[in-house]
Amino acid sequence: MVLQFSHGNGIGVKFGKQIVLLDPKISDFVSFVSHAHGDHLPTKVIKKPYCTEETAELVKLRNLDFEANVVKEGKKINFDNFSVKLLNAGHILGSTQTLIETDGKSILYTGDFKLWKGLTCDKIKIQQADILITEATYGHPSYVLPEIGIVRKNIIDWVKKETKKSSVNLGAYSVGKAQEVIKLLNENGIIPQVSDAVRKFSEVYKKFGVKLDFLRNGEVGEVAVKPMHLLFSDRGRKNCALTGWAMSRNYGCDAIPLSDHCDFNQLMEYIKQVNPKKVFCVHGYEKKLTKEIKERLKIPAFTIRNRAQMSLADF
Ligand SMILES: [Zn+2]
Image 1 (spheres, rainbow, N blue to C red):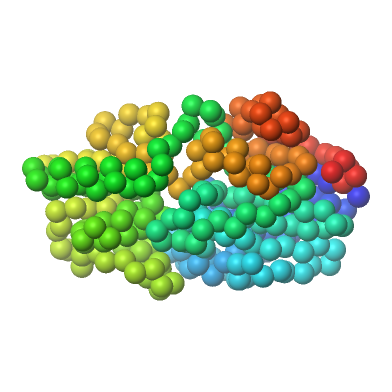
Image 2 (image 1 turned 90 degrees about the vertical axis):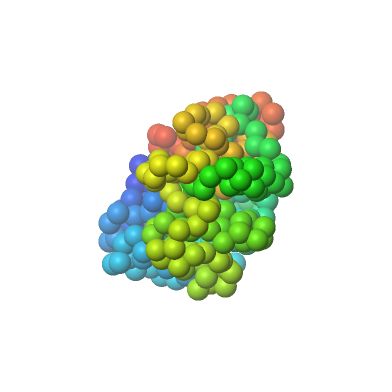
């Protein structure tokens, strides 16, 4: 049996006559959506993709017509000559890794993931696999995040300090990051104002049992959580951008590196634990990560920008 990987319409995995698409733009054949961030979602559905119920509910807020084959995290789905399990990725609510098993071999696709336990989603489940396809967002050794406890403390310290002088805006991606920030504020006795987008995605989190408190629509709070592009929309409020990219980019305001992705060291740690025979890197610093995996971990590693083909016997 020959195993082929391609990158274009998401990630394509072909074995025998079977095609499996991971986070495709056009969902066809058998396909899987790892989580509800826009860059991982189909824009056209020919055949319904598989995803968790949480992901399906979050995606429906962006696309009312979205339909999916909803599957439970951790439950094996059997197809003719292969099986798939979606495993927690720890990235945002409902996010999963995809584990494909065929012919006694396993292929694991990470989607986006992080290793520490978020405040609003389940912790990642790490599973060994023969072939790993990993995201490489921070796949460069220069990207090292502070420990999450320090990052959270820095956010609360910043809020306490700045609200003595003015009201504040915290800029965070509307799905995932914003809910982590709301939860962190709640745990420190603060109930924030939220933008419309943050509110609608947060309601889905609440539906799945994540307790989040935020002000009613129209109420103005001393602390607001809103998407990054709305940070400078009102005068007189101090702004802080919350993103991992604060490690390297200037946002024109204060910034703290709160991320839902692994940094470089955590990517390495994860790959060690998965213990694959081969690694394919996508999304981000994939070339650099490929080089580092070969040098530091002595594991064959490739990018899949172009079609890669190999015999399953190679694994
Ligand atoms: Zn994501």
